Length: 184
Image 1: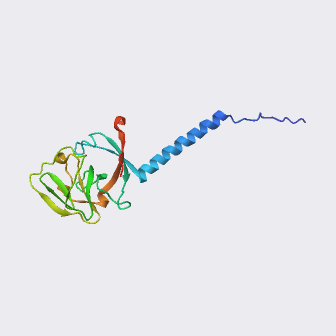
Image 2 (image 1 turned 180 degrees about the horizontal axis):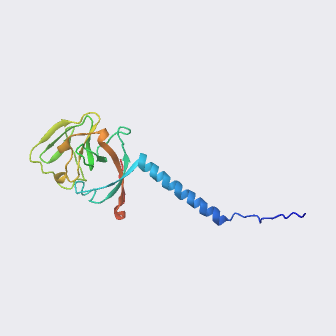
């Protein structure tokens, strides 16, 4: 009785196969990381309307850090995403923080007795009557649109609690020609 032994040729791992698998693993890992960060840390936002002109335009796409307060202190000038409680989501600018006393007179915003010089505001505010004075409560921010004459904001719905600030805008990613990082 003769025994037949089958010998299989040794299979070589080619560098090209290793590179392809490494690319597949990288792409899957990168996509997983992006999805994880989107769920836990960042969100994308599309601007609707003209209340933040000239800083932001209708249809701009933004990246926002999720639920930034109270993990970090709010600052005047922050651009935030808010859910003011009326079923809407809006992008606005923080003009006053907890403890600030504000009022509007003769078309100007005053915070802590000083007139605010805001280079980002579209045009002088038309104020038919004075507003305030109002002290921003602890755990709240006061927000306004940069297009003050065409913005529904804290003048309409009052100071916004930290829990209703759902994002801190960190950059505009679209249109690419207007890519911008918003510094704190």
